[in-house]
Image (cartoon, rainbow, N blue to C red; front, side, top):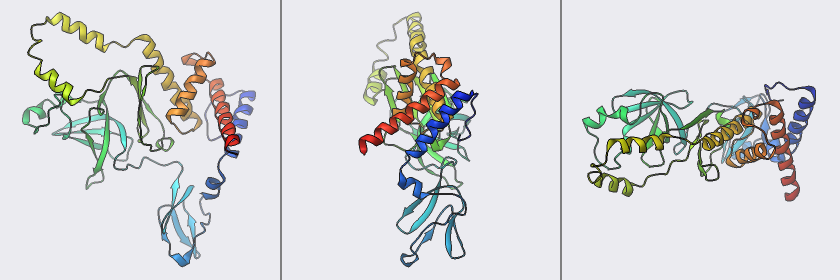
Length: 329
């Protein structure tokens, strides 16, 4: 059963196996026909000319697959997209990473890639929001922006000559992530979409699904506009007369996360963990359906990682896809 490691009794094992078999049956015929395993022959038209790409080779005059995956065709190029593979970055990907080193004029981030990513000081918006040249003072104050073990959201800008990634965080929606949980799932469970930032207003939670398999679930933070930041800088002198005790109380209030919000963060994070355990694609719709299922079934947060709830999620997903296939039919 897809290598799922759960402590299942006999009844739960049969229920889970039935649900997974139904999900495999409901898979589209097109994807089944395009699926190949190692040494399978890939049908091609030699008259039009063929370019053999990744995951293919020529054997006895035929194009065969060297990895398990799905056959993709782009004009004359034929290649096999592996079902389970490491993260392969593309320019424009939204990623979540952790700072592992503060170097001169740059930060090095761990992003679940074969090499570390680099975020240059000149490739991000400064805390004051003012667009200007970076000075030696800015370089000395780099640790006040990001330091080791900080979680950061950024965008892939390009590749450097040594193969490492060059990131950028010039928008206010990028930057340091606080008061939440960082989850790690296999990157192949995350599909590239137009939107990877999600604000769940009902729960007061921000959800960032990184293309690199790092997912952030944290308390909602309002994105600051550049004009607002400029106004705050201009008016900072007017508020200098306020007492330090009042400022410290405001900071404590901002740093405090309500118990209900923390519970919502844990529930959504456990929903992601369940989907990763079952090997389902992690999207906003599937995550929210899993959260609603746990709430409607009166499942406690700590019970979501148990075998019974995992079986319920698999059965619910199979039922949803079955009803969707009937409507299309």
